[in-house]
Image 1 (tube, chains in turn blue, brown):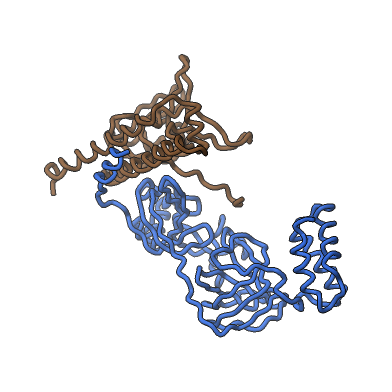
Image 2: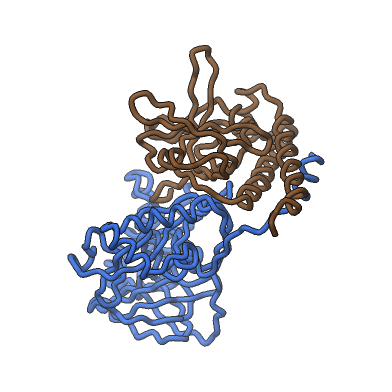
Length: 310
Length: 205
């Protein structure tokens, strides 16, 4: 009658060993929620599954069949709060900064890498660097345009005996540098261990008022007339781009008693010029690991032939 | 929908086509929705990037400073730009630059209807930078390519049943042959070639 038959069948399959329910009954429950109460299907599904979990006295992790999550590639994770399954290699483990976090690091698959967090209270087995796992029922999250996955107590972890070639998600972009965004130039970062947040008026979002450490950064926009790409230049890339070192920037700011003179000077030297940058993507940004000013002579001939032939 | 509004791309257009882009529109009724000018080749533009020769600057303001800049493309067609107190960086560049100079400009198209009903199109600059000839040349070739792409889309659309939204709009709002803009492209590239052929003899290297 509706598009609810397939989800009903999937739920039925999950409980067929434990409960004596029919597909029709499940479909009816879904129908009430979706069509009468106008609840989104995903929510309706959750609610129905929870009802049956209660009835069967089961925990969510005892469910068979993955609960209908989609197996996704790292590069395809582009929305927060989705329940997904991933198969990935632990390419890096970082030191957990908070007690609530058991493990934090980077997962890689053929399409790229993504940060993961495993909570202490979830009581999950340790992940080892370099090993490949099938992780079922993880939740996606987003912070400042950057996506991650969170492992939780319903997550199942299965070590796989296979190798994954972790993809290089570097991209190359070319265009005119049309804007330098706020938060560029000489900035201050939080000095707390593993916190690199940029301070706003001497305050860190996490650690409050701190004595910041100076750094150079440019958040710029490359535009080729068809697409815009936001690019982050770190200290090294900023120095290469602008010819201004961190030391010089500090001196400029000291002389002017104002840090904004640094970004102003940088605008003068780089805005409105063409560049090519290459690097990994991080959320909506490209990190400029390689950069090149495009100032070699251009060839008008080919374009002229095209223009005359139209 | 993305959480942050997407930034408008800066279109590449020669001055002749830009100055013909007198029709403006919004995509929604929201008061703060972006305003677009319609390029006669069938594309919307809320921002432009241009590089050319700044030939003249003048403070045309009465009570406060209001700077006009004229930037000329290789065809000799002029982009007009106006910067006042709300564009302090661009205004101070126009105050300080000594024409002639190559400049690159990022800005928003603005239209203004004169008393006799003519619509003037100008640029409200977000930033102006002094650049070198190589940057100007690259812009000319890039703008030629983007313009040819639009002309091609325009021509293809006329032959297909499903017409591109902005091509259709251009057909409805303008009576301007796109052939004019193909000629602008040819003219600009020829002028560039000419310059490149003669440059080595005149240069110091």
